Length: 165
Image (cartoon, rainbow, N blue to C red; front, side, top):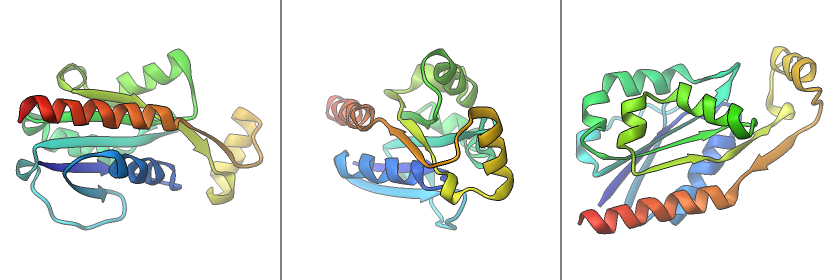
């Protein structure tokens, strides 16, 4: 069983979540940061595809949207997991998730997760720091990464793989 994890990580939080997720998934795993890596892969070669990103200025990264658009039909035929790292909670986080991923993909997914997030002010550029300070009043790094959500997501995917094969 082969799993592809495609994601974008701006300041390292999504990459951290992918690392934790990879450690808890069964089978062969390839993780690719679409923002940084130039790894060549074919989504058709994988049984499961996990897509994740983070929210910046209210939206998921453009490269995640492009990946979904380009491979939309293939994704509907696979075991799909969708996750989002975002600092917001509750209804706001759910709305950001729903805005990030198309409805038909959400309905077809075997696992969906909100992994919490981090505001890593120390890794932000000047403009980002000013926005975070003005909007949220945050001037130092803060982490609300939800490890339990990551572990539950991995468990759901592992169960779905065992049911299919």
